[in-house]
Image 1 (cartoon, helix red, strand yellow):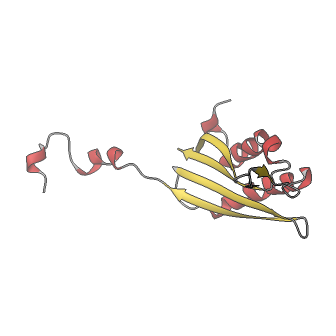
Image 2: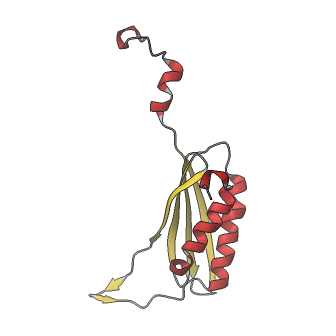
Image 3: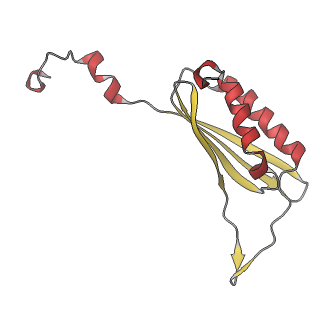
Length: 134
């Protein structure tokens, strides 16, 4: 199956299913998805730092449960409706688990990217020399 024939929502679903093992029991981090032509090019997860004191690792709190990971995946898919008019960029889902109430929160950041190299031919015909440019 070609990725350009699959909706971005299905691709995000695929990404979260691939990262399910990393997300389960994670206390905080960022899921990164790079998009080009409405297709996922690469994805991954940035884990928040593991804290230590006096050279000893501290016991972290409880991380995301399996059901919370599924809810996170659905939220990531549903949030795509807020993406407007861009096909190239990054999507970052920042999340953390609150230890006090065993709840979690997430924020979504969309970043659109544009490449001027591909626009040069639109504004400057190929037959113009660089000296003729304004």
